[in-house]
Image (cartoon, rainbow, N blue to C red; front, side):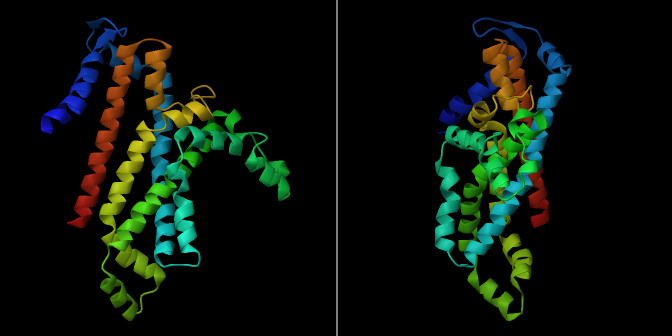
Length: 272
């Protein structure tokens, strides 16, 4: 199993590191040292793309907190909790392409959002979010949060189902309300599930949104919604500079690895 894992994961990673130091056109390569990294870090577009990834990273707490709150309500068996548990999981069963199409229909100039605004008498504030760099990135982030909502909700519901009910009963006997129970009982015992949801959402944000972005905006307008993952595709298959694309892939790998390790250490130190 170890050899199989090394072959399937370790070898491609090592190859990517090697090609990031070469001038590779997809067939032949020649060693150029750090030239790809120097070219990348001197490219203003790269820093704009990195900023887009930072915005996705900043949205992850929202993608965690909202499902956590909903899972807590469902765990309290509020009215209609069985229906909402199934309805909230629906986006998880839909492909990224379909989610992207839904995103376009929702945020377009003649889309659902503006239709709702006109219906409630707020036609003056309607806008075409997909036509500007900032607006398109906001639309992608909202769609991303919606798409991971079901997965994170199920993770938290599953986690809450494993918690010791005697602790809840003791908290209720001591007079703890819903908020105190959530903050002082549920959240500390859910630490590992929150940690897992964070890493899963981080990996999704940085390495699984290609199809969504391709369908919704194709990385535009300009480079307004281009992420590092999408930038790899553009450099490799649109311009044919595979060595530079490998360097971007290495940067993406290092960022995800560094954030994951930092997050694990933070949670571990608090647990200690």
